[in-house]
Image (tube, rainbow, N blue to C red):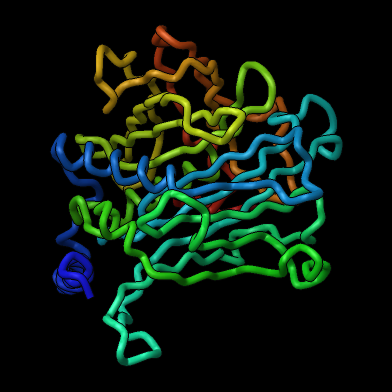
Length: 354
């Protein structure tokens, strides 16, 4: 096993043990981060997204945009994400039944602590697992209009060979399309070499991870012209209760074409519940600047919308909605978010679901 592999796994184990020894009361609701720690998270998630591909199935609806979220699932360098086939239209102006409900594929990415392979003569090697989360996913027939597959390249190469693959197929009707794939495990040399399994820090709190998960379910983006897919990274900002959102519109060939960088600042009450917040676009990049700034030439509308029971319920135009209109070279005025209205009727912000 390579020295870098051993170090990455050893760091994860040691840091996990230290955090587990701390009482819950000693862990702040949200921590202060350095600019270097934030930039490290930004780089890690950008590299991870570049290694990931979300594809429609053979019978999928090509007129519905896809969005791929990635974020952190714990403080130790593990990841989680959500693949979304957007509702069409994004907010129904007529009866909700006339809209095509959004579909979700939830997943997580973990390094395996087990490094001993079946052949004892082979060197020890860290493995990477990509696994779908059934309770957070809509499972469909392989040839259906909402079928999607997700791949992650964990290798040192740039091709698709050796990629991890999962899909949202059910066992029924999946045989003719390569079958159900709910989990895949392969060696992770490429992720280790790129530093994606070495934590930038261990300061993500339980509150932070709840915010990441809520944003996956409430943040939606839409191109101003046609169907444009996107990838989105969610991570922390420097100050407590600040969150960075990087939206990467995809070109027709599936490449990340520039970035729309957003900052979300939350206001939290004495009970630790989100009350209001402000969403703003970070300024246009200058010169060779690429971190913490926007440079996408694709116009996008960024929405914060109420979460829905994916696959069952739809969003309507009469419900609460907060949005920003991004255009290259401009910085729109920040928008104030009423989180109480967005999360009303859910159990996600200290309330009781209706």
